[in-house]
Length: 214
Length: 213
Image 1 (tube, rainbow over the protein chains, first blue to last red):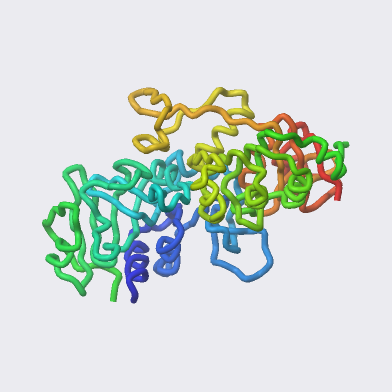
Image 2 (spheres, rainbow over the protein chains, first blue to last red; image 1 turned 90 degrees about the horizontal axis):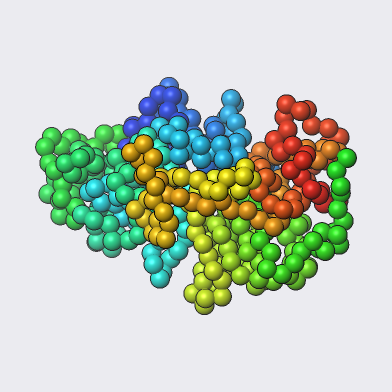
């Protein structure tokens, strides 16, 4: 498995049977490929699908939230933006998985702007992290050697204190009231490796081997 | 029966400095023929309300590339590099609005409300310049209603009465934008004689004109 596959497959284990889940663009989209057989998860796409299916090459007016041609599962529904964000903001989404530029030990997330460099916009991300019951952040642990898991985000926030779980290729970390707990470490790394690669303060109690990876 | 509108009649509705809301999500459900006509009209200094900045060769992105847009109100502009270029040159004003907030601001206008209270954007730069109100112990941003002079609606299956339903995910912002503009013009992807009343998404009184094929 490459780094992205490790992150996606680990996050898939967090999804419960019957959950309604919104996946962001990039690594989060890959989570759908690792849902264990027998577990029923319904995916929502914020542009207006309950029951998003796989991508397709066929002619269709269905797109996913990345604008790519997609399919809808049996029993699904097309909805308008108002209904879609009623799901999202109203607490009807069980889990949202999003990428981020930075995340910090207080659960604050930065994902939509690098001032003066890149201003793609927030899209639906601010509503998703504000309204979903559980927010999982999927990101590479470092960028050019610099930790992306910080004491305090330096970039403008997507939301403050909303991340619940952070999954990288190195580790699984849980945001609690008393700080950021190191829960699991990938077998290729030691706890020391993770501490060295992390700017945030990690609380270390009972650390397990990362689940769901080979 | 609804009034059908010819291309030149639609062009006559357009004026400089208009605020135009345009349906679609990354151009899925965007009325491209109506955009062709806005380009043909050469109107300028428009304020465009749309989920995103489209692409340089598709959707509202074409109006931006054609330098007809003074201000863009959208949730995402990452798919159209030209918007970023114009922003750097201070040739376009861009108001970035969280997607759910954008939809609800438009809904509020269409429903006769002054605005909405949302937790989205609290403690971020979206909060700048806005009132924070506390209701039952929770904080919310006051986001003002947002309407348009003209709404351009796409992705629609239209019947002879002007009732609409929408094709697949082309629905997105179209139904809400059809409630929140002085004039609402529809480009149909398909025409039918009658939509079952149980299936109508946008009832005909919201619709002013349907573009003739």
